[in-house]
Length: 351
Ligand SMILES: Cc1cc2nc3c(=O)[nH]c(=O)nc-3n(C[C@H](O)[C@H](O)[C@H](O)COP(=O)(O)O)c2cc1C
Image 1: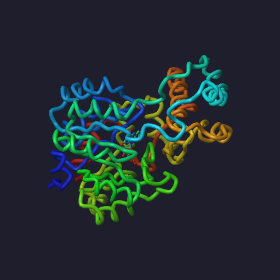
Image 2: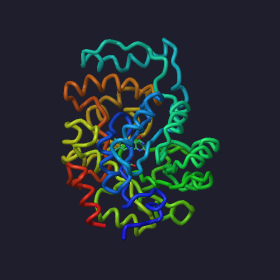
Image 3: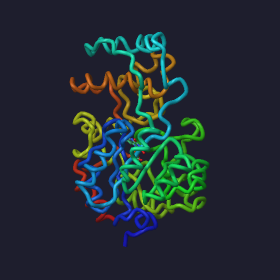
Image 4: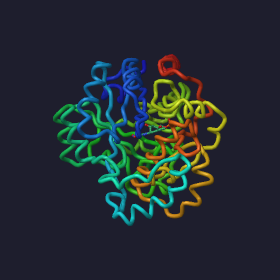
């Protein structure tokens, strides 16, 4: 009963996709569990070094013989974010220095790169041949897309606006995620500024599903069977859930983050560039409310993100939640499940 155009293209039983999490928050366990339960599990690999992608795909295959998605960020830096001179690096560090001190961290060495290279990652992904290649922040080149077709890799791209959905469709992407501004994590816009691409899931899904040939997957603000059914009613052929899976014990979120996701603090989420340099939604904390306004101009992505990642390791070790991102979507106050198997069972039963 739950077969749709999307389930057919993806070769899955239920129109449920566990959205990928970047920044080390994806786990093999969560992705495999969702795929084994008949949905599409995803692994966010944008921080995975290219030479780890084949092993990652092998590990996923070892845990599930069902389709799964590997996810990359197509654009790996914003202007000014590729290389910094020592002087520029020092200037950015100055703004972070009080917080490095607060966490007893020494000044870091200037790195050669602030992010993995998408070009090298996608080469490795083609070699590894995951069943599904999902991506954000752009459209792969025609050559990469032709390689995917030849190798039987299904493509799944995200749109935050009608124009982006049409562009993905014209490029021949197999399935399109219509992602509303309610969603947790990054606003993955690529044709206009994220701040100018803030359509909600309800409007975006309805409109996009009448404008594109590819099956549409609704993402943003969906956490239970009611939301899933509503998405299907609006013209979507599946739904992608992020925040609801992030709150489950199988995700890579820290116990402190998961506890906050299941608390009243999620009534206040905010879209901010203060963590990574790109716009993203999370729970408000000291960093978003008190520190960010004092930072002045933020460093571009991924430089801002790299400095925050240095702080993050020490903050997490100290169970601190005031200096780290607490990604969450607007639907979080309605979350009920702490276990992804139970969440999948509930979603499937509700369908
Ligand atoms: C912590 C976090 C990290 C995310 N990272 C990625 C990512 O790397 N790639 C991607 O395509 N989507 C990413 N997303 C988006 C989710 O896959 C999903 O589309 C979104 O969370 C759906 O909205 P919801 O949070 O309201 O359920 C992320 C979401 C969260 C909450």
